[in-house]
Length: 416
Image (tube, rainbow, N blue to C red; front, side, top):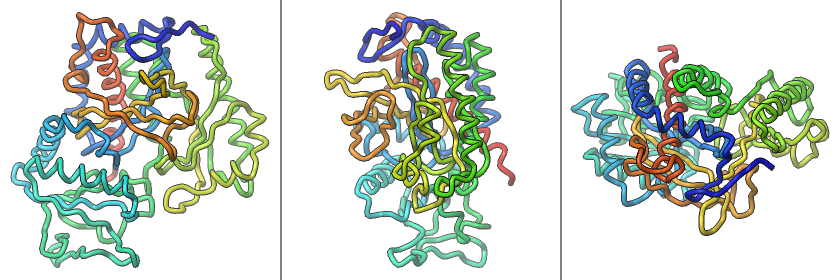
């Protein structure tokens, strides 16, 4: 095994101290670089970024543009959330006062309802009137949403100035959202109907290639390697030869990096549905033999994702060990970072006492522990060790903002 040691509550590898030093030591240049990027590529309304920290590598593995989980944020930092929401909405229009949140249709999910309540309360505390509505009621009928002759959407007597989507549109873009005059945040074309994880990580690769030149580091330290091929059907095995070929190549690329940096770990790959969320349509593969001999349970798990939508495309992503351990419980921890616009507002650790450091923690049984960002996300402390909590959270904030910037470029390149 490579040389690891627990410092400041997480596990790090001494083989990549230069990554942490490069980020902390260049924070002024980094902040200047980000400011210039946001001018050209404004960030989507909100986002949450799933990170994995192996010590020698810190990288995003998912970027969600219709995030839930607001109920898991630190309740003591409302002032950060309120300020960030005000900043984003005031950039759209200083006269904006009414917000309609369109939620997911599966409103019996108590965890999701708690998230929507928390999100609504943040926006209300920021000084806006808020109403929440799903697109459909329990009978599949449109709920109180009407469009008048001037293409203005209303909810009963409530006419919003802006529509906030907290529905990832996995089931398609509904007719009622087409051609309305109010702004829709985020853009409806960023829903999973059109968006793919492969395209997002292609943008991310472009972003970190530029960023890594600024820091003079290997981009691999902050990027998951990935591959993609055409359509796949895990039931009929259509497309599996392509999948095996790309997986074999990806294993080789990962092993080459492990050899380059003397990392004595076993490479693994996460195969994920190329669109969709909620931790569904995900499978871990440790070698090609496993992929060539999938059992019925594994195939069934990869047939459908959220809403019963068929999985027909996947991304093959480098597995990143989560070597961060939350004290004193010694749970494997995965940081999830939240933002409104380009403003980071904190996040939480995702924990799972039945999962190891290579497995997907976003699964039933997971628990959450708030991350108290405060000023740490944009202001490292040069007087502390580079592995202090303050500096660790700053590094997380940098990686999360790189993923947000990739999403910003997705948004920038959407056809009007």
